[in-house]
Length: 452
Ligand code: HEM
Image (tube, rainbow, N blue to C red; front, side, top):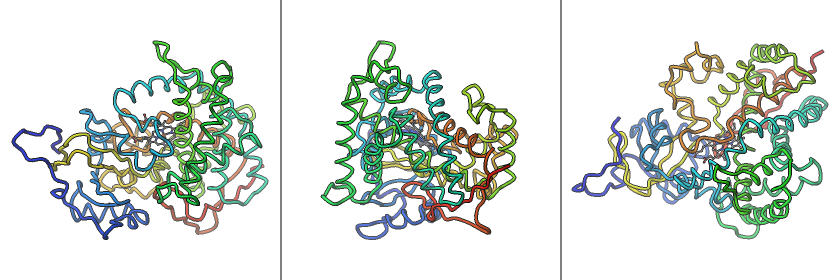
C-alpha cells in the first residue's frame, strides 16, 4: 500500500466525499449499528467499500483504515500526521483533559518522560507489594461468596486496588468518596450526552472532577516529601534529568487520567481471561501447575518471578487478543494524508479497530479459538506482523501501564488459581458488549470451588 503525506502543489485539496463509504441514517449516521455490532458494521463497510472507508457516528464523519499495515501507519505515525489529542478529545476532553493521550508530539514526549519514572523497576516493586498485601482478603471474600457475578466483583476489586495502589489510600471510608467520584467521571466520559445539563451523568462527572481536584490538591504538599509507595506519591516526586517536576494541576490531570486508563481496562481483560479459563479447564490446570511450580510463600508473587509465568502470560495475551478492552483507537489528521491510494483531508478523524484487527481471519488462523500458544515463539509470536496484536496500541502513545496490567493480572491469578477452580454454568456462553468498552452483558456468573 502506498502511503505518504506529500501533497503536490498542483493537486486540489483532498475531499472526504471522494473516499468510498456512506453516512448511514440522517443525523445519527451509523451510531446505533456501531454501538450494537461494531465488528459487523466494519466487515460490511469493508466488503462494500474496501479497507479505507468513510462513515458517520456520534454526529461526525470519520475514516476507518483496516489491517495490520494500517495500524502501523496510524500508530507509529513516523511523519507526525496524526493528533491523538484531537482524536480522543470528543470523548475525554471535558473530564480528563491534559492526560497523556490528550497531548501531542514534543509536549507529550516531555510529559511521558517524567511520568515514565513512576513506572521504573523500583516503584513497580512497591506497587507489587501493595497488590500482594491486598489480594488475599479480596480472594477470600470471593471464595466465601462461592457463586457470584465475576464482572462486578473484579470491577470492585480493581477499583479498590486503584485507590490503594494508585492513591495510597486505605480501603474503607477514606476511599469511598474517591471511588464514587472516579466512577462518576468514567461513566460520564463513556456516556452519549456530552453536555453537563443538571441530572445527566455528564453533570455528575463534572462535579466529581471538581471534587477530585480539591481532594488531591490537599494531599500534594505532603506527598511531595513522603516515602509512600503509591503511584500518586511517585508522580508528585517524578523529575526528568533536568530536575523538572509536574505542577499541582499536572499531577491532578495525570492522576485522574491514569486511574481512568487503568481501571476498566484491567477489569475487562481479567474478565475475558476468567471466562476463557472457565471454558478451558485444561488451561486452568496448566496455569495452576505453573504457579504451584514457583513454590510461592503465602501466594505472594515476588517481582523477580514475574517473568517466570510464560503460560499465564500467553493466556492473558490471548484474552487481550480476543477481547481488546479498548476496541478502537482514534486520531485526527493535522495535514492531508495519503494511505492505501486514498487522500484523507486535514482535520479528519481516522480510526483503527483493534477488535477487527484481532479477529481478522486474514491475520489470525481460526480467530474465534482460544489458543494461548499463538503467543509462544513456536506459535508464531516472532514472525507475525508486529501490529497484528495491538491491545496496548503502539508508537509514541503506547500504553505506559502495560507492565502494570500484566503484573496485576498475574497477581490475581497467583492468589486465585492455586486455591480455587473456576466453574461456569453448564453449556454456558456469554455475550460481550464491545462499545465503548468490552464487557459481558450478563455480568459473567461463575462458581469458585475450593481446591483441597
Ligand atoms: C489491560 C489493560 C490495559 C489496556 C488494554 C490498555 C490499553 C491502552 C491503549 C490501547 C492505549 C493507547 C491509546 C492510543 O494510542 O490512543 C493506552 C494508553 C495509555 N494507558 Fe493503558 N491500557 C491498560 C492498562 C493501563 C494501566 C494499568 C495504566 C496505568 C497504570 C494505563 C495507562 C495508560 C496511559 C497513561 C496511556 C496514555 C499513554 C500516552 O498517551 O502516551 N493503562 N492504554
